[in-house]
Image (cartoon, rainbow over all chains, first blue to last red; front, side, top):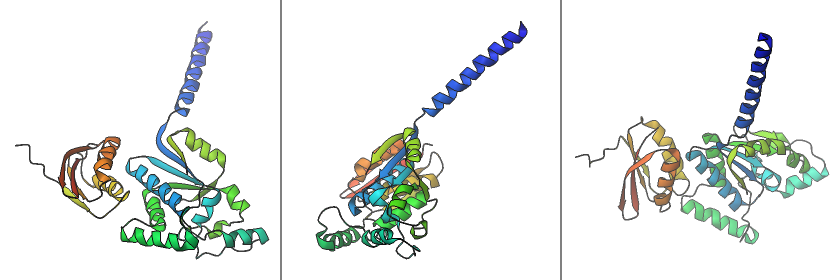
Length: 186
Length: 80
């Protein structure tokens, strides 16, 4: 008789534990999860302004770099090592790092981008490389899409030294996004 | 009179555009104790809207705002 009582208790206790785990799994954290897809200077700047601003608002911030945004995190001073033909092509045609990305509009063969950068300096607006290092200081986490790296033939050796930079796939993004209050795609 | 608000720390944020003023104040407020006041001086017109939004979200209190031409002075009390 007593054994059954204990068993019932244990059963309901384990049910409660499961329910609790389920509930905490649904919990939304004060977090911003962002997909950074674009390799354009303007959209990358917007991404980092929102990301650093979110840290100021007390949010945990995680950015996922994929596709055209991936080469913006390359370090122009690093060597990539051996690459196949396609890798060499992508490597040469895509921007080498945050200082080499162009405006999405009014680039005008690079003239527009150069003018915008000058104007930003004049108006004291932080440059993209400055925004990236600020994000690093503030603890913004960055994940780079492993598939994009592989597709474009980038090696980890040529990526910038960003604190805690990690490589991941879509599941990692979805895990973070599922528990984030705010999700963005830029 | 409790009218006079004394700042325990002053931050000169003039000339800094978005997002720097909120990024800096969010760091600066942590450098005073709870209950103390930070005075932030900014020239960014966006700050007039951004500071109240930041204070509300981060759980701090703007106890006074002074406008002097293009300069806005916020007195922010650290609440937590």
